[in-house]
Image 1 (cartoon, rainbow, N blue to C red):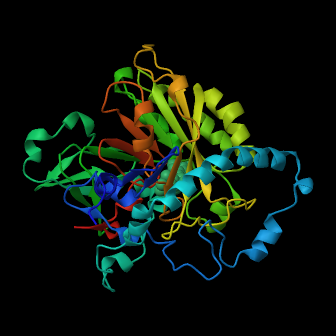
Image 2: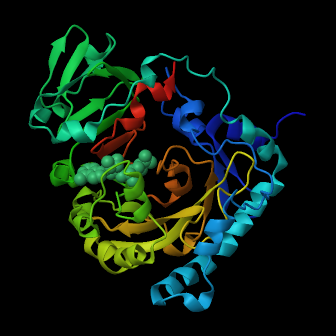
Image 3: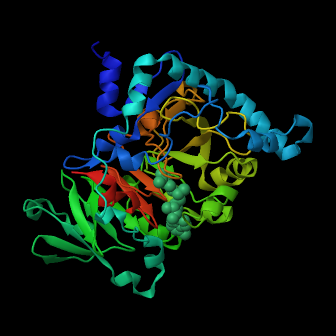
Length: 420
Ligand code: SAM
């Protein structure tokens, strides 16, 4: 049968608005591909987990396989909860109906469910022995070396770059034919072309989307991002901090930082004079939620206006684990708040009462702690003229039209994550 208009749009842009709920289903691969013209994000690499076959005994509403033992341990009776756990449980109970409604809506959407198992197809498995099998470069370790300031990345610009180059953006550059060599650490590296460009660093290739830039540095140097003029600030600030928590440390994929370090992020100075929407990813730890509400947002000058949730499913539509597991939930939350600008133009600010709280985005997760793109969900809440100026803090990837900052913003830009 012919695809519905909704499914056709989903297959093109990666976003499907689910019927009768505050929810969307997202295919991050399709959504990210809007940033690229010459390359495509590899679905096989993106979806490295959760595409296994449904184990026996798993229900569509999402019971984890082999998790009975863990569940017995983690699902303690309410009486055994201490005060903080009770607060966490209360928060969970408030969110639960929205998550269930969104998930039920997904399970009713047959046309979408029928394409989910194919999200990962569309390319041949990478042949063995190729460069992508080599271990990945650790920017975190290189950035700590005393030689860091001497490392350079080479950007391969096509001929037309000669006319469009904005030299004001680039601190030190020298030409080597059509390759431009730029310091890779503590330097703003920009691709202001209308196409993706390829870059090379220590023998690995990276894909840099059109009209994007990265600044790779430690948190110590974040002040260098503060724009010289308020009109050059950002309308959307997405932040996914390396929060300290049991699981991140256990897996030690990246270093984490104590909460108080994040108080120093200069949100007010990064915000555009017309104001900024701040979107902060948080874990379900109650202690962290209290810290953000009572200390972090107030010190950043951010007013909390809504909380959205990311519900994680497998390729068959079932939740990645039981919704009610105490220490391991199949969802994470995104706190949204406003940082007022110097120009208070109430006409340009989306009205608080218009914001639907508890919206849910559903997707099949990619690599560990890789978050789905959120701009489709939050765009109408972003103040100022469109297109907005966007920045992602603690980023591991780049987007067309965005500035990505962190100690490894090129991580998912390596060519192993792309197909030509
Ligand atoms: N949002 C990202 C994604 O979807 O892939 C994940 C971000 S991860 C939660 C946090 C990032 O912060 C990691 O890349 C980590 O290396 C980085 N980070 C940790 N300590 C840092 C520091 N001192 N300065 C800058 N970045 C740091």
